[in-house]
Amino acid sequence: MKALVAGGAGFIGSHLIDALLTEGHDIVCIDNFFIGTKKNIRHLKENPHFQFYEEDLSNFDRILEIFQKEQPDYIFHMAANSDIQASANNPMIEYQNTYSTTFVLLECMRRVGVKNLFFASTSAVYGEQMGAEVSEKAAALEPISYYGGAKLGSEGMISAFSYMNDLNVLIFRFPNVIGPRLTHGVIFDFVKRLKEDSSHLRILGDGTQSKPYIYVLDLVDAIMRFKDTPKGVTLYNVGVETQTSVTRIAEIVCEKMKLEGIPFEYTGGRGGWKGDVPVFAYNLDKIHEAGWHAHMTSDEAVAKTVEMVL
Ligand SMILES: NC(=O)c1ccc[n+]([C@@H]2O[C@H](COP(=O)([O-])OP(=O)(O)OC[C@H]3O[C@@H](n4cnc5c(N)ncnc54)[C@H](O)[C@@H]3O)[C@@H](O)[C@H]2O)c1
Image (cartoon, rainbow, N blue to C red; front, top):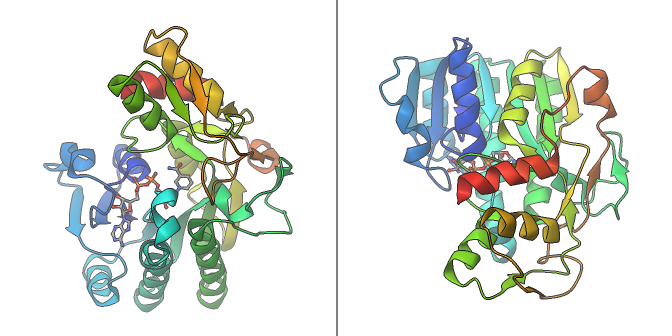
């Protein structure tokens, strides 16, 4: 098939492209390097099955032209503003990069008659569930970040376009993803700060913030496994059963950097910053019953990622 990967120069999208190419598909990648990098796709430059367009996915006219020219069979929508903290002071970032990119892709699919969509959604659509294990059936979807709101809005539009146009859609809601080509987040911050000054480590919040971290190749494995979906919207929580606290991440970083006795200085409060969901746990029964489990635990994914970031 010909797969269009929106946001394919990003962290997860570039790994997905590698997996799709290995399976023998042709790739059309669209990205404007808002966060993604040329480095992530440099190895694909000479590949005859890979084609790249540097475009803003919220530019409807231009994206429609690409759809008309390329006639893709399947859209993998990986584009968004993935830096939640960055949009806290500027929600327009989410409107343009998270919500509008979805709307534009859906309308292009409708105009050109593309039926298959994968959408990268997020645990952020659930908002703060006070430590409860959330399943796909959670009744209250109350995002607390602009990013979570834009993703939930995108899911709403996907539902409507799917019903109106008989689409086959796979939505994965996943938590923090880490691994090679990661560009930002707590692991990066800790390594950077300790490299600059190893006399202490400043930690946002009280350190008990605790989330599941999934290794990027585990996530890509699940996308590849479930991408051929039936008509309508199929939704899965995808993640790992275990969680890693921020203090544990700090300990792992120190262990890997061979730094002993570093004092941790906490800024205090439950969340790291406004919009951050401090504690999160997933119910993964649905995807487990469908026969998929992550290979790595959350702590293993963190440890392996720290080694790569160093
Ligand atoms: N990384 C995570 O922990 C995580 C967790 C849950 C969901 N997600 C979702 O998974 C997807 C991929 O995340 P990622 O970590 O690879 O992030 P990323 O920022 O590395 O990748 C997103 C890509 O989209 C591109 N992009 C953004 N706005 C664009 C626009 N207007 N036009 C063209 N390109 C645009 C960026 O340049 C980037 O290459 C995103 O939709 C993200 O919201 C990520």
